[in-house]
Amino acid sequence: MKSIQSVEISPSEDQKFESLDGETLFQAKWRVPVIAGRSKPAGRINRHYSASRRFFAQYVENVLILQAKRQKAFYDKFSFPFLPHGMDADYTVTSNGNGILSLYTDRYEYAGGVNGFTVRHSDTWSLESGFPLHVNMNKYKRVLLRMAESQAVKRRESGESVYYEPLRHNLRRYWKPEQWYFTDEGLAIFFAQVTIAPRAEGIPVFVLPYEEIGEVKGLKALQEKSI
Image (tube, rainbow, N blue to C red; front, side, top):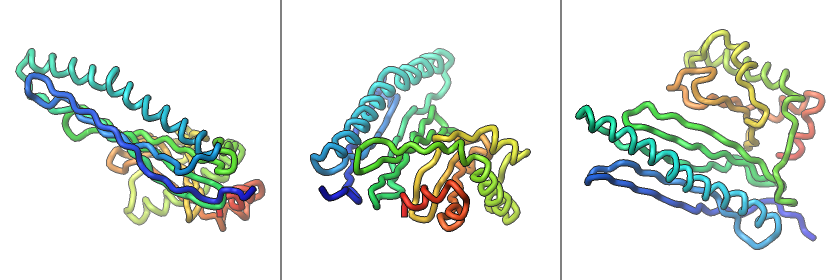
């Protein structure tokens, strides 16, 4: 049986709009990937994102809309102007080839005004099995953070980015081994918004080139699986 090297992907989109007393209360849009074909691996991956699709629908209905209603009632009580709440969730495919699919989903929420926040979740799949590709990133934590720190220092010195101090301490403190994905250029590790950098910096991402991590003992397998 020929192994699956890459897949065709299309979006499945849902929207939710809620108004109250003729005023926009809440609006949301979310997209999840759908893998083409009827193979077992595609079915497994699609079931996962079907569950994600249901989660977004329930989260919007049972959490975010209720929060918007409560805030509007409070604002109306004191004649404060109310600005609509909302959510926008979308995925980005970062690598699709050589039997591996890597992507992340960003969920952006805002509660009126401009100070929203974004939460990122990443997934990397084996296209041969349809199961997540599990890599113990804690095993490589020290070397990956050292490379990330080197990139961060260069960005800071060039004025490209701003980071909280102490940088090395924050990288270690907010490291999470599940926050990674493959790209065509290298292995990407990321940090949650406002953990190591101000909100304006977005989600800090460090792409570690394969030619560099491939020289480190133990990381050669990652390189071979993704390029």
